[in-house]
Amino acid sequence: MAVQIVPQQELKNFIGQSFEPGEWFEVSQQRINDFADCTVDHQFIHIDPVAAAETPFGGTIAHGFLSLSLMPHLCEGNGIAPDNVAMGINYGFDKLRFLAPVHTGKRIRAVISLLDVTEKGDGRLLIKQGVTVEIEGEETPALVAEWLTMLVLAS
Image: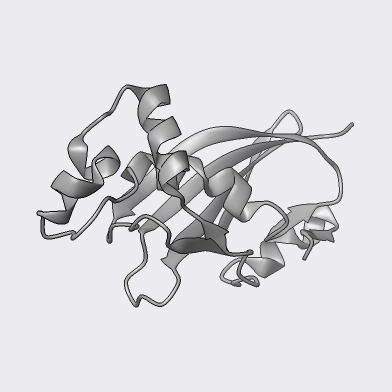
Protein backbone atom coordinates (compact mmCIF):
# COMPACT_ATOMS: atom_id res chain seq x y z
CA MET A 1 0.00 0.00 0.00
CA ALA A 2 1.25 3.48 -0.80
CA VAL A 3 0.03 7.04 -0.63
CA GLN A 4 -1.45 8.04 -3.98
CA ILE A 5 0.62 10.96 -5.32
CA VAL A 6 -1.13 13.36 -7.70
CA PRO A 7 -0.32 16.76 -9.20
CA GLN A 8 -1.29 19.51 -6.76
CA GLN A 9 -3.88 20.97 -9.14
CA GLU A 10 -5.70 17.60 -9.24
CA LEU A 11 -5.90 17.09 -5.46
CA LYS A 12 -9.32 18.76 -5.11
CA ASN A 13 -10.76 16.23 -7.59
CA PHE A 14 -10.43 13.59 -4.85
CA ILE A 15 -12.54 15.39 -2.22
CA GLY A 16 -15.16 12.95 -0.98
CA GLN A 17 -13.17 9.88 -1.98
CA SER A 18 -12.30 7.14 0.53
CA PHE A 19 -9.08 5.19 0.22
CA GLU A 20 -8.08 1.60 0.96
CA PRO A 21 -7.97 0.75 4.68
CA GLY A 22 -4.59 0.54 6.35
CA GLU A 23 -3.01 -2.54 7.85
CA TRP A 24 -4.38 -4.07 11.05
CA PHE A 25 -2.41 -3.22 14.20
CA GLU A 26 -2.72 -5.11 17.51
CA VAL A 27 -3.16 -3.08 20.68
CA SER A 28 -1.34 -5.15 23.31
CA GLN A 29 -1.47 -4.84 27.08
CA GLN A 30 2.22 -3.91 27.04
CA ARG A 31 1.52 -1.01 24.67
CA ILE A 32 -1.37 0.13 26.90
CA ASN A 33 0.88 -0.08 29.99
CA ASP A 34 3.64 1.87 28.23
CA PHE A 35 1.12 4.55 27.22
CA ALA A 36 -0.15 4.71 30.81
CA ASP A 37 3.42 5.27 32.01
CA CYS A 38 4.09 7.88 29.32
CA THR A 39 0.91 9.87 30.07
CA VAL A 40 0.75 9.13 33.82
CA ASP A 41 -2.82 7.85 33.28
CA HIS A 42 -2.89 4.66 35.33
CA GLN A 43 -6.66 4.27 35.64
CA PHE A 44 -7.37 0.65 36.52
CA ILE A 45 -9.56 0.02 33.45
CA HIS A 46 -6.38 0.28 31.38
CA ILE A 47 -3.75 -1.51 33.48
CA ASP A 48 -5.42 -3.85 36.00
CA PRO A 49 -6.92 -6.90 34.25
CA VAL A 50 -8.44 -8.28 37.47
CA ALA A 51 -10.23 -5.08 38.49
CA ALA A 52 -11.17 -4.25 34.88
CA ALA A 53 -12.79 -7.68 34.51
CA GLU A 54 -15.38 -6.56 37.08
CA THR A 55 -16.46 -3.57 34.94
CA PRO A 56 -18.92 -3.57 32.04
CA PHE A 57 -15.86 -3.70 29.74
CA GLY A 58 -15.01 -7.19 31.03
CA GLY A 59 -11.28 -6.51 30.86
CA THR A 60 -8.72 -3.84 30.19
CA ILE A 61 -9.19 -1.33 27.38
CA ALA A 62 -6.86 1.04 25.58
CA HIS A 63 -6.89 4.72 26.44
CA GLY A 64 -8.89 6.67 23.86
CA PHE A 65 -5.87 8.92 23.45
CA LEU A 66 -3.71 5.86 22.71
CA SER A 67 -5.97 5.02 19.77
CA LEU A 68 -5.77 8.66 18.69
CA SER A 69 -1.98 8.79 19.04
CA LEU A 70 -1.66 5.72 16.81
CA MET A 71 -3.32 7.55 13.90
CA PRO A 72 -0.04 8.66 12.27
CA HIS A 73 1.08 5.02 12.16
CA LEU A 74 -2.35 3.70 11.16
CA CYS A 75 -2.60 6.25 8.32
CA GLU A 76 0.96 5.79 7.10
CA GLY A 77 0.92 4.73 3.47
CA ASN A 78 -2.80 5.52 3.03
CA GLY A 79 -4.61 8.37 1.35
CA ILE A 80 -3.47 10.94 -1.14
CA ALA A 81 -0.95 13.77 -1.35
CA PRO A 82 0.20 16.31 -3.91
CA ASP A 83 3.45 15.62 -5.73
CA ASN A 84 5.31 18.59 -4.29
CA VAL A 85 5.10 18.13 -0.51
CA ALA A 86 8.17 19.14 1.49
CA MET A 87 6.58 18.30 4.86
CA GLY A 88 3.31 17.86 6.71
CA ILE A 89 2.49 19.40 10.09
CA ASN A 90 -0.29 18.36 12.45
CA TYR A 91 -2.75 21.24 12.59
CA GLY A 92 -5.45 19.80 14.85
CA PHE A 93 -8.92 18.34 14.63
CA ASP A 94 -12.25 19.83 13.68
CA LYS A 95 -14.15 16.90 15.18
CA LEU A 96 -13.18 13.92 17.28
CA ARG A 97 -15.40 11.30 18.89
CA PHE A 98 -14.44 8.15 20.79
CA LEU A 99 -17.25 5.71 19.96
CA ALA A 100 -16.18 2.28 21.24
CA PRO A 101 -13.49 0.94 23.56
CA VAL A 102 -10.55 -0.97 22.13
CA HIS A 103 -10.20 -4.10 24.24
CA THR A 104 -6.70 -5.38 24.93
CA GLY A 105 -5.48 -7.66 22.16
CA LYS A 106 -7.86 -6.26 19.54
CA ARG A 107 -6.61 -5.06 16.17
CA ILE A 108 -7.40 -1.65 14.74
CA ARG A 109 -6.91 0.03 11.37
CA ALA A 110 -7.65 3.39 9.76
CA VAL A 111 -9.85 4.28 6.82
CA ILE A 112 -9.21 7.74 5.34
CA SER A 113 -11.26 10.00 3.14
CA LEU A 114 -10.31 13.40 1.75
CA LEU A 115 -12.80 15.98 3.03
CA ASP A 116 -11.32 19.31 1.98
CA VAL A 117 -8.28 21.08 0.52
CA THR A 118 -7.75 24.77 1.26
CA GLU A 119 -4.95 26.84 -0.23
CA LYS A 120 -3.43 28.97 2.55
CA GLY A 121 -0.85 30.91 0.53
CA ASP A 122 2.91 30.94 0.97
CA GLY A 123 3.16 27.41 -0.47
CA ARG A 124 0.81 25.80 2.07
CA LEU A 125 -2.28 23.61 1.79
CA LEU A 126 -4.63 22.78 4.66
CA ILE A 127 -5.88 19.23 4.22
CA LYS A 128 -8.90 17.88 6.10
CA GLN A 129 -9.14 14.10 6.23
CA GLY A 130 -11.92 12.01 7.65
CA VAL A 131 -10.39 9.18 9.65
CA THR A 132 -12.28 6.21 11.03
CA VAL A 133 -10.34 3.84 13.29
CA GLU A 134 -12.04 0.48 12.93
CA ILE A 135 -11.89 -2.37 15.44
CA GLU A 136 -11.57 -5.81 13.84
CA GLY A 137 -14.79 -7.79 14.15
CA GLU A 138 -16.84 -4.90 15.54
CA GLU A 139 -19.43 -2.67 13.88
CA THR A 140 -18.78 0.48 15.89
CA PRO A 141 -15.40 2.12 15.27
CA ALA A 142 -13.05 3.13 18.06
CA LEU A 143 -13.09 6.73 16.88
CA VAL A 144 -13.98 9.06 14.07
CA ALA A 145 -12.11 12.28 13.43
CA GLU A 146 -11.69 15.17 11.05
CA TRP A 147 -7.92 15.56 11.07
CA LEU A 148 -6.24 18.71 9.81
CA THR A 149 -2.74 18.69 8.31
CA MET A 150 -0.85 21.68 6.99
CA LEU A 151 1.22 20.67 3.98
CA VAL A 152 4.23 22.80 3.17
CA LEU A 153 4.98 22.56 -0.53
CA ALA A 154 8.43 22.41 -2.08
CA SER A 155 9.35 25.52 -4.02
